[in-house]
Structures are given as structure tokens and as C-alpha cells.
Image 1: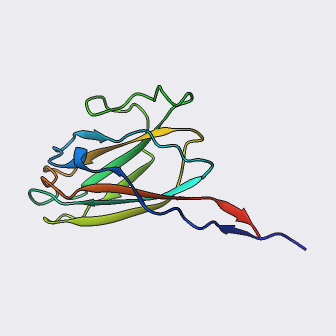
Image 2: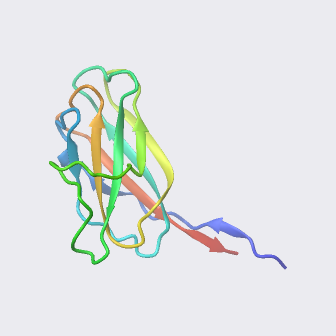
Length: 143
């Protein structure tokens, strides 16, 4: 009989970045602490953020998962250094003021530890409080 594949039960949602995104200026970066995916292959990512003004047309927030091969030294990118590689995902923003919740699903994870980093290209600063990037991991199971 042929095997079937299914998504595993996702992990409980966890915070990747929070206060570092508060008052984040346009074109600025915020990074979180190292995360180990512990054998999980994919992640669903959710950003919840408010803004101090109206988001520009075609605004977005980019997400990088900066990998490490030794769990200590991560690929270039931090609060002041832009990554030199393509983002793992972009969260498209609506051109409105106020808070927005956007999800990007089934994002492939690095094989080892990584640091999440976001860059806002919204045209205005993020709100002073309440911004958060969360994730939930899962894999594929044979049934």
C-alpha cells in the first residue's frame, strides 16, 4: 500500500521579535535571538504591526532567516547591517494607517540555527508598542 504524507501538528506559536520592532524607522532593521528549528522543515510566520502614519503604496516588511553552521556565527545582517541575500519572505502591507496582521506560510527553514531579521519598507515608522513577529514550525510526516 502506498504511503501518504501529511503536515505534522504545528508547534505552539512563539515570539521571534517584539520590542526591537517598536518605533522601527522606515528602511531600518530589527533582529531577534538565535532559533533552532530542532528538525522542523517549515515555518508559518506572522507579523502584527502598527504604524505612525499611512503606509506607502506597495509597502512591505522583509523577513530574513540568517543561518549559522556552528550555532554561534550567523550570516551578515543585524540592526545596522543589511543582509546581502534575498529575503526568505516579504509581508505585503496595505496602504493604510493602523495595525495590520499578515501571514506568510510554508517558509522553508535553514537546516541549523538561525536569527530572524526584519526590515520595514513601509514609508513610515512602526508604532511605539505592540509590534511582534511570531512563528510556528512543522514538518512532513508519513502516515
